[in-house]
Length: 241
Length: 261
Image (cartoon, each protein chain N blue to C red):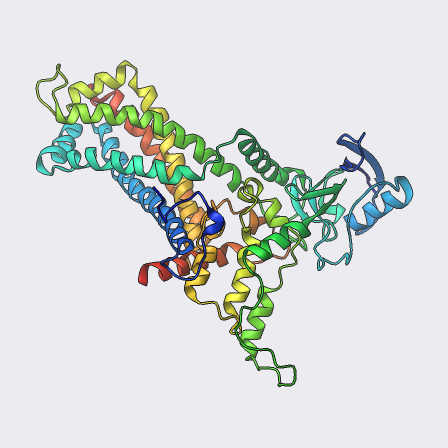
């Protein structure tokens, strides 16, 4: 039996001078296995063409449809309306730059984080385009691949109370990123450099341990586990040298 | 008065080794984290003993007096604690308190986010074992309660320290001798201090259980002592110590009338 869903959607256009934030209601007939991607597109196609939201892949890979769904940051494309009550409240992810309605720009934050943690291979080797590519053993390649499963949807940052009040905090996404380069043998940064980079109040020791990052991560990444490991590793580096 | 440890020019802190400014800064962050965690752990250890010994007052004045004399005279543990624990308390406040946001709008943001995450469980009706499982999250709110109870412990605990130090080292101008005596503690608690001790005890137990849970997850989440086990262990600890606290205060209230038993 089909339900009539009531969507309460945050409306605000920061670029329009006369815009003030409010919740707008839309009624949508629920269909079988409906997800929020389908529902939001229905609203935009049939009810209100001015509604702004982001989707690209609609399969939980691109990470652009993160939003607060009934109070929780998660991916809209992976959320079935069947998992939600009849009233569904949609707000944009907090903290990120607001583009309008449900659309935020997570890229600005991620770009800044990448610069802060210097998210690239640091090497002194000259690149020789004619040489054969260096080989990496498969086990390590898989590990690095695993640590690149983060889709950068920004849910862990939006759900983190520390990140919400400290713009320089690199958050779970940032520490996860650092872990990827720590594993990579091509990156020549030494232990001391890693220590300086993440054993700070903007890095792992800025974390209060509220655990929201691990709870809201739509990709179920082991964020808390990685951070516990990094904490111990950083302490061991500092205390034994 | 220029010192190369200056915080005034953060952009002039080049990295590249442990003797650099960036290296020292990172080390300081590590030490502040370690100090706040370790002092919290030590204070929890003290509370374990304190509440167990205190709750022995349910057996009446004689048991209470025996414990007090043992701690003060046989071992000078009470005197040592009366000096060491307030010091640890102060250090813990300084180092752990640094994480509390100072501005009102920051606290409001944290509060609102914690509330939103906690309430979201009731605003979803997902059944167990669905495609993506919704995990309950209330640890952000728990942290806010840890701050609140921490402030309560700071105020009430400071009073408790003054009273206990006064009591252990002097005769307070009214007692026969220095030291804790059932004949003084009992009526004191009965005359109204029970309310303060009840609040102090509950605040400490809440603060301690949440703190230990967080500490375990922060440092051991990837080991066998993972988050699920830590949650169970510290929930049990919370209830046991909450009951011990009530027993202790009730026992002290009735200590001159033969305790609770």
